Image (cartoon, rainbow, N blue to C red; front, side, top):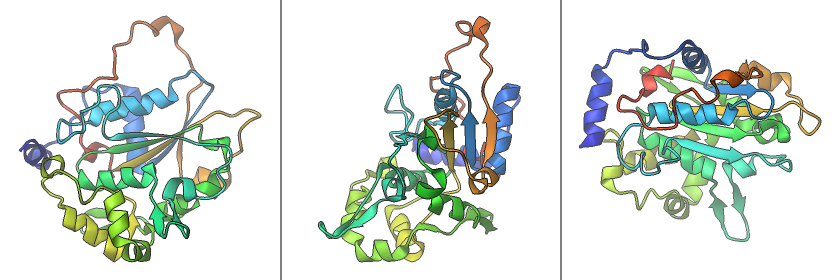
Length: 267
């Protein structure tokens, strides 16, 4: 299958980055250092576009990842709202009224990343500091510091406790589409049952192939970052606009025949 061939290619591949420009190599170096990037700058400098470019650059033709011509399957845009003051909008919450756990697009995207461990997955938190980051992003910031290497893989603490999955097993797995995923849409190295077992045993941990990128505007409508956030992020300032090359650059929002694999992004 395409997924199997892609995995075999990754196992034998020697990392080649000669065809990438210096700016892209800087981003790759930062991501390999910490999978949490802040892109700061005024509006119109291409911060969110950059994240999509990296997703297109690394999205392979396996499963349904290239199904959408404008949005790669390894890319997720989440618009931060000013009223976010806890993690429920990102990680979900237990609903006493419905008697179940409410799953969010962010959680579904993390589960999707677990299905394709050799593919880098990008979460773009747009206008990240419209709300206090250390409040709605507290769990992620803490789990980020628990990462360690175990059997040549980067593992972490859990974002969502295993007790949540054990309590709401049937409903939550159905909501996560683990019961309805087509076999050909899963990387050959990952089975549905394996993902379910990992969630029940360890909870939802941070997949090592997930990169979170926050776009940041600093003005009167936004919040300042605490030292806790700055300490855990790699920051780029994007305040330079090159108007002369605005219409000369090639279109980078297209799929490539030789996508970069997760080895380029994971330390």
